[in-house]
Image 1 (cartoon, helix red, strand yellow):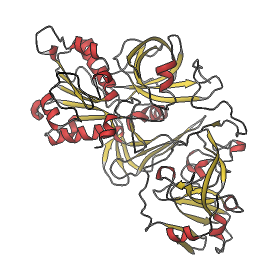
Image 2 (cartoon, rainbow over the protein chains, first blue to last red; image 1 turned 90 degrees about the horizontal axis):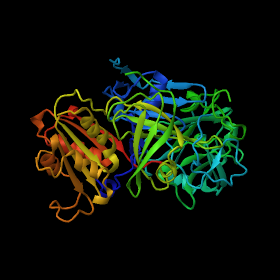
Image 3 (cartoon, chains in turn cyan, red, green; image 1 turned 180 degrees about the vertical axis):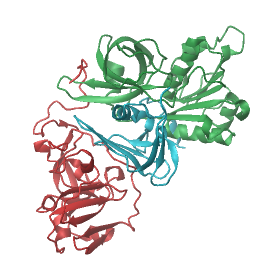
Image 4 (tube, one colour; image 1 turned 120 degrees about the horizontal axis):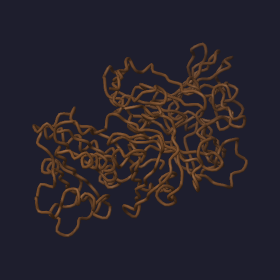
Length: 105
Length: 199
Length: 251
């Protein structure tokens, strides 16, 4: 761990990993909630690349591009790819073999 | 449009002129990417053109650097609405790379290390409109901006200028790339504001 | 809880300076209707010509009707945070979307002691949990380990002192323990040498692995990953550790 990185603690926008240009799934959950109509950060994805399951909250989300790309934290596979245009949300879920979303209770 | 926040301007330059519609000027060079910066050892780097017949022509890093280079100064326009004027690059014209390639393909699909792709008409890569760029602003192109080498096609939105480019596939048919497949415009002319499918 | 995903207009009602680079801003967003401690909210600012920017911020306080409290630190060369920290005034309007996040949250009905580990402004969602505990009068034991560069960089100092009952002599801090770790300069009388967080810090100030505790870790990526690793070294099960990464962004 680089001391300078730790010392730069302080910026409190959610979820940006410095060096790496990604955020946690937590930070991207707003856009996905809009698309799905439900909260997804506690949901569990199974990666179509490596087969490992994990929380959406732990995805590495690249959100500073033309859309949002949620990658598997283990193998880097693109699990979810989302684009929001002025009229539609486009989703590509080919990188997820399953998505388990808890029903809100 | 929603509620206007008093006094908020964003990171923009009010003197913006000569910009495509909907763009704002930035003096910085924002880093946008859809994935981690790939680590590509130069001794393993290859750039490959594959034709519609499956014929391949490949260049090593050293072979690329040995080709005649050009130093274009161009304006770039990102679909996320920033534009940056007079950016200085160095690289090899795609014309040079295509000189000995025999093809009747009409379309190109650029591929990148890391899995990214973007499509464009082959004509948009010819006639001095596109480069494989390996230096930016007098220095080796940093990894975060697409180094060791990226495609540079400045007359289209900048997502067409694939970072970490690994090759170009010449095709008889048009196949949408990473963003074109998901709501972004197939061609992406910033002056016609072709941001999204249907624009 | 009802899901709310529409952008809601919100008006600034209160601003409080935490440090020279950090302010807490309270918005009133009619129709908001509450949230969980640890959740965050998307903030949208729109310029007069229609240009807009969105950022996601953790909320600093638990639910309080239509009120939404943020604590924002200025990101150098940022786009949104300098406006929020330096220019925004009571009465100004933004749009909010949320609440967002169902994972990095603490609910008062959850049993078992809680360890909160904050790096810098990663303390913000953890403070929402501390405040939620106080709001509902929970007796769940909380321990907050808060890593900062120096005493001047710490947020919420007076409130944390008050909540722990510091100075009333009962010694148990009302079930809330707060440990500050200084990475660059420490106030006089501090015995711990300055430096980054260690396994000893976490075992001294945290809970033993058999206490049935849950840990919430928030800070820059490197900090979060280091702390999560140290907790596992100490014997904590990874399933008991929840993390959220903060860091510099386009601001």
